[in-house]
Length: 338
Image 1 (spheres, rainbow, N blue to C red):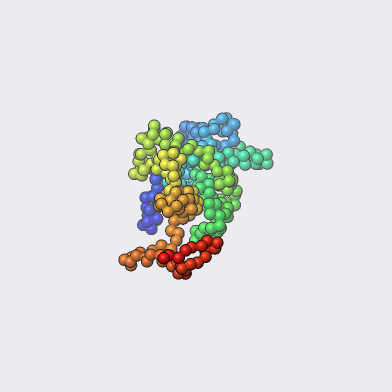
Image 2 (cartoon, rainbow, N blue to C red):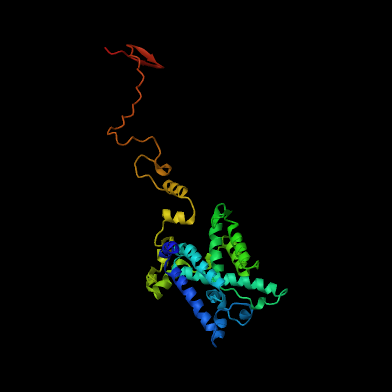
């Protein structure tokens, strides 16, 4: 029951694509494990096995869909898959809410391709010194999870994360500590697909890989043609369309101003933005405020006491001397009245 109390809230917050991965990934792995035991086992290698030999044979699709196949060959592999699913429920809902479901699907395939390219480069280099790297392949969604985890940690490099309640580790070192821990569980063997994921994760904000994805406007057009604007449900969860993601209206041009939510999502402060907007708007009063108007400036009046502020006192003119009957003011002569 305690495990159910943990999983149930996580499952409830998962959007459509995340739920599809959570269900489809283990089902596909179990089905392909059964296919491997038949005469059609070669089909699994053709479709999902991503290694140097497959790329030489121009099986480029394995770069993108290969990680979705993770044969459950042992009990440890099954436990690792359960941990994969748990981490997916932690990191992917926020990613999907920010990107949209269709964009996250493109992001997943793109990150799989990048990680596999780096992994195969490692294998190509190792093939000059060892035997077997040509047949080594990257399987499972752990590298994809490591990319999302590393990118999120580096978005706050000065912070720290709790390593399973044991110790606080700075965010910039947390992904390395996690990979070292998994390598320890793997019998002190280097997990090169995890190392490839770290390479992509630590360069994520530097290279800005998301700029290579289709824009939200193009994704919205695709959703409008293929799936009713993305308004569909999967496993009792909604598919988040691109039109419901933060910043879509600004990017599409339907809204020419940014809201506080846009500023918060972009990580910029709202104070300077609001100040600059106030400084550029003309004053609506007729007292000649012009462009120097500043909101909430001046002394103001106290609210709620029911009284009005007293009128400003005018300076009293200085008393003038009484006119003389016959005086000379400067060079002019003034006659006295009769």
